[in-house]
Image 1 (cartoon, rainbow, N blue to C red):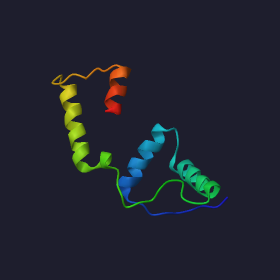
Image 2: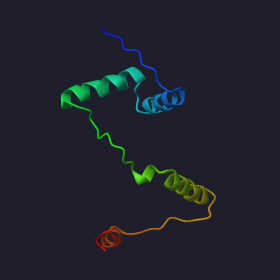
Image 3: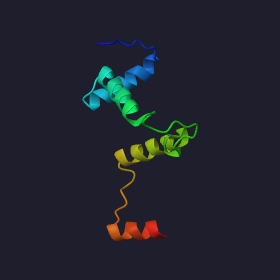
Image 4: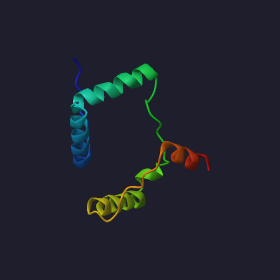
Length: 92
């Protein structure tokens, strides 16, 4: 069996290790999954782009953390909507 050695930022590796652990994987298994999917699909199994999802922007993440903190402190309450109300909102 072949072995691959790669260099990666320490923080990125630690974050990946934590995520993979939550998924029941280790780094080696996760990399093997990536490589197998790459070979099966004949290319990278996800879009590679310079565009970033605005959901993950620093501004939005800060806003979400503030909302979560307010909720945790009991300073806000969830908005409750029925499926019908949500569908109507989506159609507007």
